[in-house]
Length: 382
Image 1 (cartoon, rainbow, N blue to C red):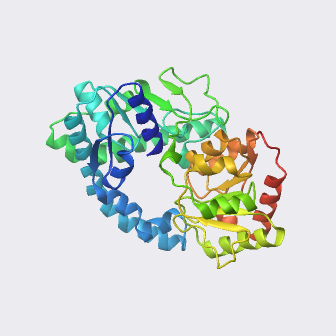
Image 2 (cartoon, rainbow, N blue to C red):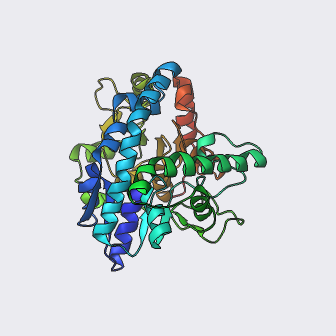
Image 3 (cartoon, helix red, strand yellow):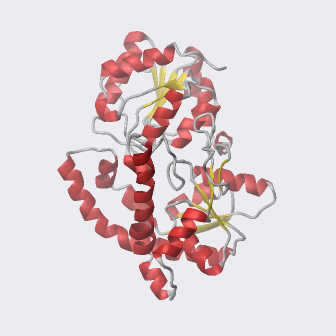
């Protein structure tokens, strides 16, 4: 949600009236920026937060177990995705926008643009999605290969987006609204007409010269989140005693061994006397009982508040966290779990913004100890 909230905040400051259409659970967050909120079905986010889904995303359990769970859940996804399209239509009808700025997973804006001439723009915090990149494959296809393979992955992903997502989930909507939209019409629109903004920093990924003008890289968008944060006196005391600790967070990511992750971090902090602030967040890191001398636990803290106060950042590699650490000029190391996190891990190493990490599935104490040692000696940009 954050790139959209940050853009909405900037547009509001320019005098525009902004509305948000998010899953209903995000209403309090959206209303920090605008009173105009239109809810999408709660079931989508509830589904993502179910233990079996989070286990799939965190690669917890065996392959067969995860595959069975995925097949079972796929039956529930269809009606939810169909309802989201109707929710998005209701929001547009109620708000009557001059422009819709949307995520690639939202389908209705494409129908609105093609049938009503609506003005739309896609906002994507990840570059390897719609517009092909020669040296990187589509985000769903893993590590880079040859230029031929990398470009082929975009064609495969584009076909899946049109046929398996837009047309499949939109079948009920287009039938009820009596819309005639062919796969070719949608494909040509996405391939040749749609405007795409990538709110990322070109220190990490430079805009390819062969991209069309309608695909632009702007800059990373981040709200001033610390304005809603109340300082923790105990944390301030820890920082006074231990200036420039290492910050560790896996955000909303899970893994198969959160207890081992926590135990290893605590052992390194205590034996090497390296202070750490550890964001336990959604459970990807579980710290055993400790006396608090070298570790301070948080569960939710604004990065624009804490990052200026730390030595380095170890994290899962989400686009937002990666860019926040970059903006604060902190060396970082990524422990990628899935998706674009592997891409950002490559980027920070290539551009010299940190130390290349290792996949969470390869976690062991020796590797994380070595990573921390490299970060400790990494030259500061401050």
